[in-house]
Amino acid sequence: MGAFLMVERSLTGRRWVGLDIEVARQAEAMAQATGLPAPICNVLARRAVRPEEAADFLAPTLKNLLPDPRSLRDMEKATTRILAAVKARQKIAIFADYDVDGGTSAALIIDWLRHFDQSATLYIPDRIDEGYGPNDEAMAMLAAAHDLIICVDCGTLSHGPIEAAKGADVVVLDHHLGGETLPPAYAVVNPNRADETGDLAHLCAAGVVFLMLVEAGRQLRIDNETGPNLLNMLDLVALGTVADVAPLIGVNRALVRQGLTVMARRERVGITALADVSRMDTAPSSYHLGFLLGPRVNAGGRIGKADLGARLLATRDPHEAKAMAERLDMLNTERREIENNVRAAALDQAEERGFDAPLVWAAGEGWHAGVVGIVASRLKDAAHRPAIVIGFDGDSGKGSGRSISGVDLGASIQKLAHEGLIEKGGGHKMAAGLSLSRAQLEPAMARLSELMAKQGAGDAGPSDLRLDGMLMPGAAQIELIEQLEQAGPFGAGAPAPRFAFPDVEIKFAKRVGETHLKISFTDGLGTRIDAICFGAMDTPLGPALENHGGKRFHLAGRLEVNSWGGRQSPQLRLEDAAPA
Image 1 (spheres, one colour):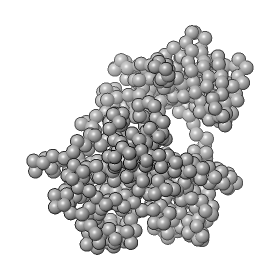
Image 2: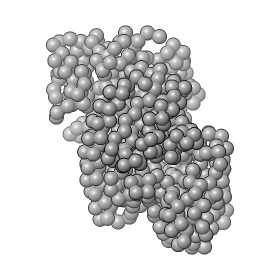
Image 3: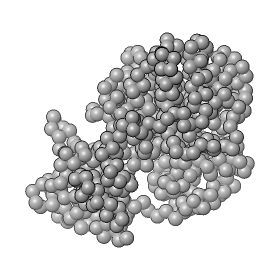
Image 4: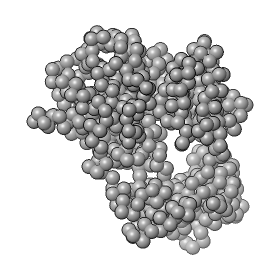
């Protein structure tokens, strides 16, 4: 298939790709059958939505999409045990991962327990001192003082630590890839267990916990009892889902869509304080969850006190929430500074090694374990390859990896652990963690590169820019943008719609701050649209458009509504351009 608008190499070095012929035909048939605008039909057809499914897809509901919680193995058993602990007022501990998914999962249970006037001990391991997941010492300590330990967003591979929890029952609510055998827990609920169907593999831990609470509500109703309103907890589920980069497909779409509506009511003091300190001045979107709120919740687990984010999400004290949100904001600023230093060194090392291998990796002494995952994500974006970044403290290394679509990194890391090439490791398709010694580094990375190559990672070229069609400026109306948003939320597994505006004239161009560029453009027929391009001056895009000299361009990006001074207008979030 030829390049869209014949753009083989744009100003950012990408090839533009439009809808393939079959998808275009399906979009045209949908437009005729439904009367929906062609741009909407293009987006839906690319997502493989059939015409008869369009109306439900644009208005996803939990009623239609929520699966039966009991379709997950051990769910009924796990929930019955948790409810028994609540009714007997047994001592409950929650062992959670230190990331946003772990924090939101823990906050969900803490919030739910409040309805029964019950509390739980929250334990989140220190990333540096204890590493990911349960450890023998912590589990033994918790078991000595509690009747039930609930492990959230961790535990599926923790055979030894769960064995160490003598005298307490352990329930695991997780989503990470399972091994061939399960740990000796009372129950393990995980859509990525080896013996699961995989139908709910896209759930994050917060989604699994929410399904457990739904099942708890069912069991309570059988006993003529009531639990809290679970719909009010969807803001936490949405935050965990987006921040953990879970694909926004199936029930995840409804969880996030309705969670954003709940969040907009500003009823959870922790999230409200976080939104305020993040200077969020519009209704929340998946972008805000992934890039403003999520990183701040994560900052405690990365470089500060591990349980700070979870405590913020669970608190009901506005003063406490404000103080914790401000602390997390400061930690996030520190995290960015640490990340920038590690990123520069890792990029230099990886570039020297070469970006054309199936795996891109870097390792360094003293690289902070709290930022290696973020830096791996930056390497992945730069090379369009799976990436691993490892920080060493003496002989001991802790690393994190990020993958690209179609390449299962978690399973490959797990294979390295089974083969004895690393000390331990695991995760899911798009993200994984590992621990290894210096002696293991080179052989492990060589083997992982082989495994990545077998999955086609080495075949990837520069990232194509996939476009959902072409628009003229006059068609970019507020109504169309709002209709396009109905196909969301957008994020992992559900890319936002992107359109090209062909052969336009730039009427105005001005730098905003150090690196951003604001322009306005027209096709010469009267309609003029503003566009903003963030980071434009760090790429060839900014200088070419700023110094356009009257040349005409094809522009590509996302449409959004710009609200300013009480007025709304269409705006293009510009991502790429090519000479017309």
